[in-house]
Image 1 (tube, rainbow, N blue to C red):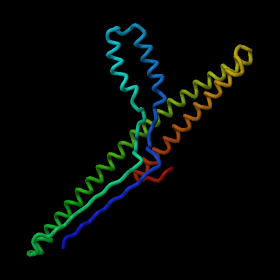
Image 2 (image 1 turned 120 degrees about the horizontal axis):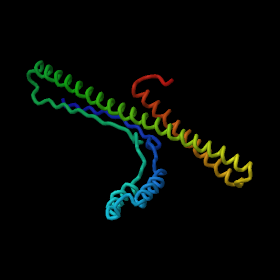
Image 3 (image 1 turned 30 degrees about the horizontal axis):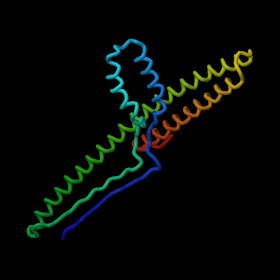
Image 4 (image 1 turned 90 degrees about the vertical axis):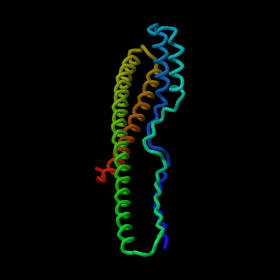
Length: 198
């Protein structure tokens, strides 16, 4: 009798897991504009360089670590061709099933290794983002202290100090978001490794 076996799994998350670096396009564009306008680069090369940089600046700078939809499907069809020699056929089928199981195990192992590597390097990148965000918070904090001192001495208006406080809150929020991203990726990495979350 022919047999058909299908297996599959699917998960759909609310959104992709990743980092949005689109807010860095503006500073990157300003920096390239300053470098190109500084006179350090031959003016005949500037249009070529701009032609190379424009597609990169117009691209989406969202780094996806994990798509929002995950799934796999597998199947197996067994059709007996000859019903005689059932013992030999059963032995061959058992060997084929063993090889199939071995290959499926290899595929699963390779998929898990790929997932592990992707999440490991995603965690390393997320930790670097946290370090950069912490540096930004520290820099804005120093700027805020200077602004308070300047306001106290009457050198700047209260609105300028309030603007720096707004920037401080924004930097702290971005740091908090980056830290949450590290926790999320760390949790998924721990799940991939089969460890309990600490």
